[in-house]
Length: 326
Image: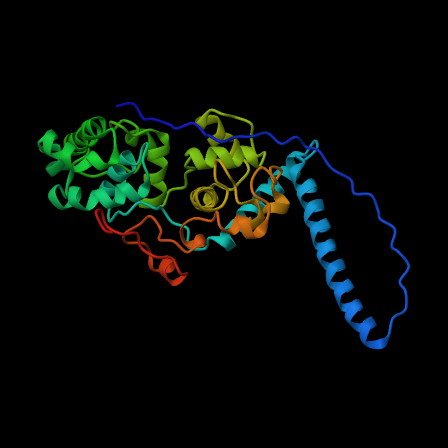
């Protein structure tokens, strides 16, 4: 099965326009009695404060929405790295959102995650790995039985063919072990560069950039690159960062895309990197309305893993429910 790459959706270009507010003349203030003046001053101060707040928010929106004009290479690198640092503070617990205990489970789970959610994969793989814990077991499995287990993930026939095929190759060509080299991983059925980098970065600690749909969407919104081909995006973004940061960078960007910077309606008003984003204003800018758009732990909801890392739980994240739970 050829590796499938989803294209980014929900892209919108910024019009780059600014609106300039005209200064307003203040009316002369008439003297009042002491009590009346105090009440009036308080009300006036509150009103002025709210007006300044709205004005500042509008100015911020107009300024942030305009793409960097002729941004130099050095300025781009600095802005990109600052965004990554900011996201590292927002998501210090970022991690791969597929449940796995070893490289074999991770490569299978990543193949199954095509065109479905990590949550649905995590709800499905416990039964799969309980019945077929090793590559040898899955290689010898009855395809119809595997299809029935994988049905909830969608495209279950094609995925069954891929996971049985990669298991056979692991058993026959790699001694039942998942290889730790890119050139070997991409030979496995259903495994492309994106899947390979997920495995290398999270199972072997070898840096790689995961260019999924969230990553593609965000790096173009941030004007890190205008490329649309995943391999070219990988190369362009990789050149902005030290190689040692690639895996964590992928987690930060993907987590931000899933929780805040959504495809159809980004929560711009709740975005921690709004001042650095050329696309600010494409989504909801009102802070209260934007907060209602936040997903997973940022919105107070469960995450995608049934067995998330302790750091995620310590930060207030909640495990996802098992398949079939109410």
